[in-house]
Amino acid sequence: MTYSDLLLFIQPFAPPDQWLQRVRQANPGMRVEYHHVEMYAKELPPIPKETWAEATILFTWQVFPPKEWVPKLQYVQLLSAGCNQLLGMPLFEDTDIPFCTSNGNHPGILGYGSIGRQCARVAKAFGMDVYAYTLHSRDTPESRRSEDYTEPGLGDPEGEFPSAWFAGKEQLNEFLASDLDLLVITLPLTYQTRGMISREQFDILSKKKAYVSNVGRGPCVNTEDLMVALDEGKIRGAALDVTDPEPLPADHKLWGYKNVIITPHCSGNSNHYYERVLKIFAYNLERRTQGKPLVNHVNRALGY
Image 1 (cartoon, rainbow, N blue to C red):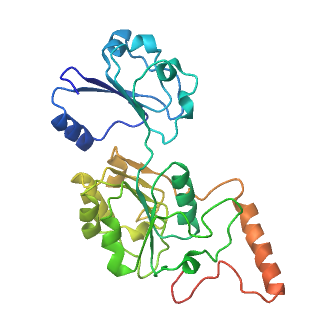
Image 2 (cartoon, one colour):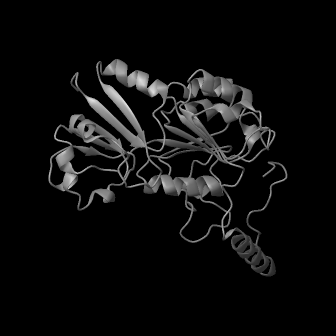
Image 3 (cartoon, helix red, strand yellow):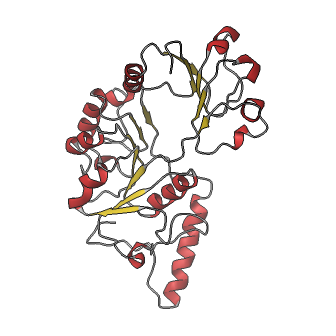
């Protein structure tokens, strides 16, 4: 880094203030410009050529300038884990500028059921190192296999993707302290899981300032403690498909955070949902006729 560095940050979301503060402290004199683009945009945003000419660092996904525009460019950080978007691009193929991917991010999946296993499959495809947490110990290959119905090619039926497993109340905080970049919550709501992520857990996550995504059940996260964590910068942000209360009142404070994404409990919706339910139903009818145990069987003692 030099004192004349100019970082162009080109993506749909602005860098968090805490991140900017950290970067500026570590790199005195560096200028940072954020330019918004839509998620899959490839068109250049309205950046003057004079600015491109001064840029030394670029953070982007699919938006790249002609190589002639960036004579001072020294480093490109990609938002993606893959880099196929660079193939055939002169800026990549005709220069020796370092291009770096996001490969190696570290998500922790809290609740390794069907949803968690599919999240792990996607994360693994992006080159991420997955950690898994389950309510009950799964310390053998046999115990890590899923007994639930799994569509071919989806999920992690053999339990092969996580590089580390944690289980039980006694290992929850150890799991959260394992250098997570992202916490994905896919828990069912039971007496055990209600309020499982509260002030103490957010304090642990603050060491890495993890991003929190909840696609399980809203009450598994203490909403008041979540907002305190956001206010105090303990986490980088949150993506919430579920909330507590739900639906979230129009005047609720959560709506006001710039680093929070809220969706209306729709992450499971797809054009194939009903079709998949019928497949499970038909599969269970077949197993019933054959005298075999049913899959996706609700455990009354556990509550899921």
